[in-house]
Image (tube, rainbow, N blue to C red; front, top):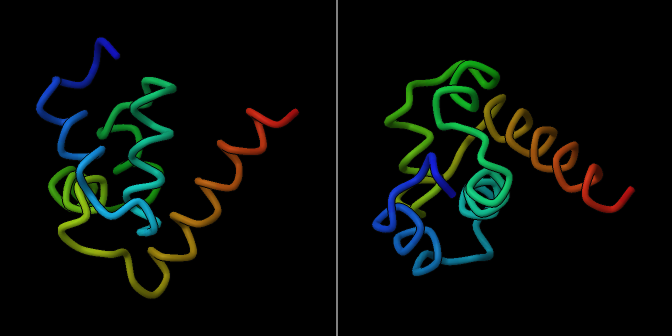
Length: 80
């Protein structure tokens, strides 16, 4: 977990794990996918991604769809 601080890891672990943004954060932290990469792929700011990862806000509308797709593709890689 070289790309994420211990603080980020703790904030993600302490957040509501039922939230999709927090789930995406857990996978990205584990796979070392940067917040910058997530923000570029979804088309939002880094701050927005951090808020999702830490359960401060939830993705909505088109962003919710994009987060769901990204989460599904990342978790499918683990299953295969």
